[in-house]
Length: 160
Image (cartoon, rainbow, N blue to C red; front, top):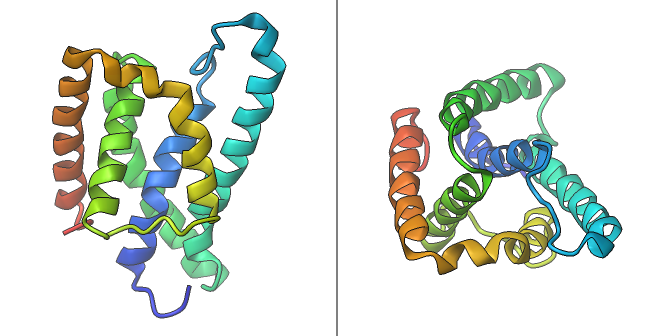
């Protein structure tokens, strides 16, 4: 990804990093039908593989030293976000992250190229939590949380 600034590289990595962190938590995805557990595990593993790839893609063409510095920045920013997840249900956090992602793609700050690692990951992810949009109160709360998260990230100098 030539000609990207350090800020742009971090902006591209953050959504994938946050989704990867959330999907890594134990028990985040529990299939309604236990018979689907093996299939769900395979889907989750493939999704996490793509999220990890999407996190590192913006850093592929930089030196190891710069890559380390950028990863430390991503991790520092992400830790500041993740600390707020402590007492929230995973579904609520997932909806919040989805709305942040939607805002970034709607504004074309982030483009999910068809077939990219992030596109593949989000295509697998949506069916796993889409039922969360059905509860109006949870959905409205997630939208408000997304606005707050975006504001928090903008305070870090991102997504302006």
